Image: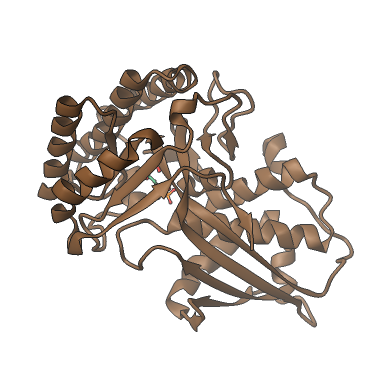
Length: 362
Ligand code: DP6
């Protein structure tokens, strides 16, 4: 066990409280350098970098009360938008089992977890990042209330660490505006265990960056991220891909400090297409893009060329398109989206988001 992991294993001898309630929101995030491929217990094969978002978020409250006697099982109830949702409980149970060694109080208390998302249900927007980040932050806040000996900085790291054990990309949602997950030589303090805020000032061009998410396909994905990650084991291009991601991350951090828009667009779009190229060259192979995804990409390229407006796209593991652009060109880009791209979205729906700073206490 590495030192860092031991650090997060805190035993609280006497609990300072028997009951209480904590509430936090955590946003989604969009990777610019993609995490695709993992090993061990949720450890990334390469470092990834993301913009933390603001509007697409999960709001979670956890009430806790001390059990009369510690039991071998976890005792919790999960409510989604105020209604019991037992179908989510096995997932949470698995998460609790995985983090129990770091949160031994989990078996001493009963919990009621109440969660809701700000974005429409089944919009094709992954709620696992915001959901796991919000839950992890609540658990760390409970640990603090019960008498944790960890410092504030360690508690923040621990929240990201726990979120990672729930879903890899979730660990990047605790802080913002830009975070890195995965040990990388050019990012001081970076770790495979948790994400950190980038340790430099971002050029003003990339501050308040806009992300409009086009809801091209709101259905369930045919191939889950977990299956996709696994297909990177034995993938013929895996090692080159992991190296490429680490190289892209290094250049992107330079580009984001310097304000180099041309290289930013190049790296971001290349990362998105490479992610999907990895899926298309897996065995078995699969395609998550839809015809509308390609239509949208071609329109973006045409618009950029014709109007010289710095707008670009990225994709996550699905058909939806994230359109990224500086705040200064918001008006022409939104009018372009409305006129040319909304028709490719299901029910003409898209979500306007902007880069943000991470979790918030409610
Ligand atoms: C394409 O974090 O959803 O969005 O760790 O198995 O929960 P698990 O996977 P997940 O994978 C996200 C993949 C991605 C790229 C990224 O966010 O970096």
